[in-house]
Length: 178
Image 1 (tube, rainbow, N blue to C red):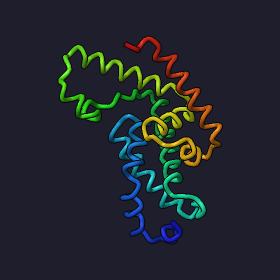
Image 2: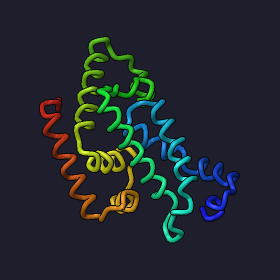
Image 3: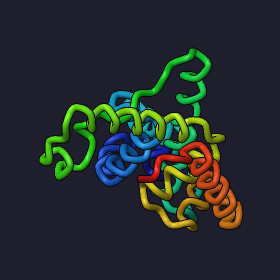
Image 4: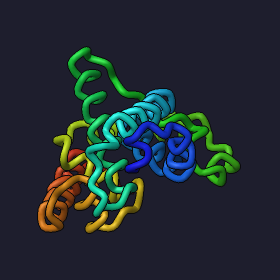
């Protein structure tokens, strides 16, 4: 990172190769749009390059990049909400291939789409910090200490944010259990 801060651009490529998949998963889980997620990945690495001089050599690069990505996704989400944009649920092609092999009936597809929309709305309704913690925990499967490091929070704050997020989602999704 220090050499990157000194302008050695060729070091950006190995950094991107190492972290782009994880950053993309986080962005996709947060933004729910593949194109926006790709834009967020690019913007994350642009910001990392520009801010390389501010990176703390005593910390790991992964959590630092995660924090940049989450903050960028929060900004994108807020801008979209101000404009009144509605996020679409993930496309059927983004789900597990095993589910696609079963060829659900048209009724089940409509119910599934409605369910996905309701879950996406419930997730969007969470405050940014709770949403970030929930997404990192359940979509990117990060540990609580990793989330704390990535977001610059204490582990206790991460635990309480996750608890509140799960509680709010349960309230908003009440009645969905089969």
